[in-house]
Image (cartoon, rainbow, N blue to C red; front, side, top):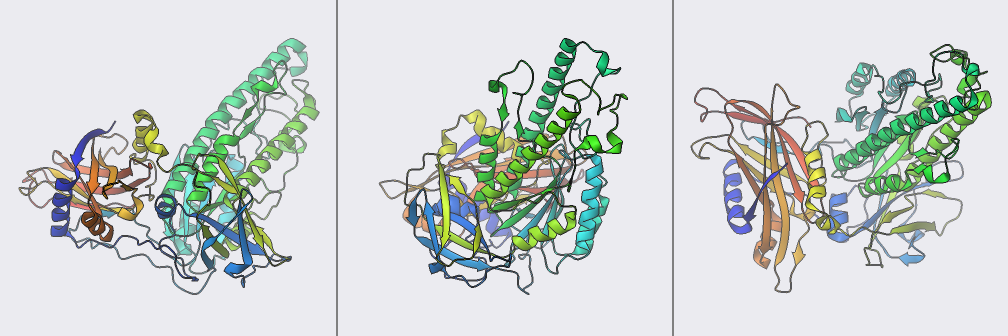
Length: 605
């Protein structure tokens, strides 16, 4: 748990500003604009942080194709009509994004000569969409993981130049394998090193990757019908329980990815290679069960899709099974692991039942793929054997798009779902975009009970999850010295444009946020040693508010550590909206003369 201390705003701000100024010239935070000019370059303000918190701007990325599937590139703002719940909205933001010959560059980094600065700022700011490859071993058999690997290697042989791409792995949790890079050689090395791993929640699968439940040894036909039905019900319950676990782990991974990518400007294409999308489990076909036992994950999927859309993440689900027939016709599936014939077994529904099950699994997976793609403005690919071609088509599809932004006429942020329709005055053009969003009150997070508020922050402070970029910041880590009274001091430099300030009748601007540092021993990074957090609260007068908005908002942590090597997870959170930012740093405190010449350095996310 986090150890919190409430700080007054003015004194802490003065101290943090002073300490930061002594060590580093503060970098300028991302700027915001009310109505940017039409441009082909991605505006800096177009991050989910600013859009969701400051301006309540709804952003819709629109992919436009003609009848032959060719991108339509000559549309203007006046060609579009945006309708929300049947009411036309005024388009305030318009831009056209497409691949060009410009080089994707990283922002200037702090020098590594003792500046001791860590940050979670995006390390790529291209004027194009970013592509994220998600290799799913949690929901994919080992056989199809090999197919995924081979397809990615084949695709990378023809990777277009200057195409920023990151690679993540979903297994027991989400893992960052490679941060954004335009170097195909680096990406190929990462993919080749992926050997696949068995999923603990896919213990038995057919040759085409469809999960099957184990059966008892012996001849199935000899079992009495009542016993066979009981075993079948038990097997179905086991399938449901393991699927429940896969659903929760998968959704947690997607939510973590949305927090990781939200700080990057513009569209992010999430290319998700998997064999099953386990978000719909029906038990009503089990003997003795009613439709009340059916399990449907639509609400959770919808919330995850909304979180991804707010981060301008479009999902491109790719079925790693390719064009698959029923597993019962595969020679590898003539018998189960106990030697029982699948084709002739009367346990459950026999051959016809297995075929129905295979068909239901594929239909449920494809339905979920379409749903996730529709909710986020992506596109689903299945029933095709050229997996590398599907990856290429996903990147091509998401690289040319129009960005529309509007301030909703309906100001009642009641959490309900609002449908979006985008219409064109020109005919013969097919549009694809997210179908809507949940009108969530940005201050809803503050109404949650403290335990629920802390859970997400605690998870984000783990080194086992990628960093969060929703709340941008830089942090100066000051090792123990006489100047710091032998304390480790962490001064945070938070982008004020991403914080939620509340104006009062007396002209003051109130803010409520906190900063935290969690310490891990470098030799055992899975075990946290200590966590310290400071909660900032107070109000700024107009002059102080104007000064902060031109610079940064400060926060400060301090702690006592013995000599040794440490890894630090640094975090900040807006306590009104729940937006989180995290970053990593390392700290070495020498055993001899620990107050002299200690070193810290940022670590790779």
